[in-house]
Amino acid sequence: MSAKTQTLSLTGRIGARTVAGLMALVVGSILVFGVGLANSQTLHDAAHDSRHSYGFPCH
Figure 1: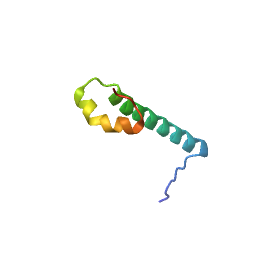
Figure 2 (figure 1 turned 180 degrees about the horizontal axis):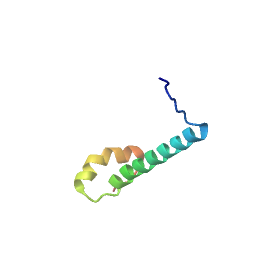
Figure 3 (figure 1 turned 90 degrees about the horizontal axis):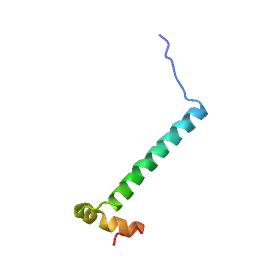
Figure 4 (figure 1 turned 135 degrees about the vertical axis):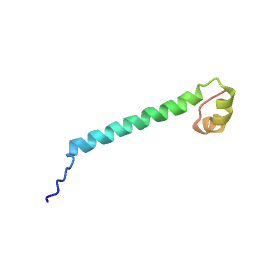
């Protein structure tokens, strides 16, 4: 039996890292600004200290 190995080229690895980085940026932005701009009092209370530590005004 012979084992087949598959390796990604340098451009394939860079492309995969770029996509992963962009997805992390999108998800992080949604979390920070979604909670930061929420009108719900519960979300506001839950994220209040985090907002101030990031310098995000909420008042």
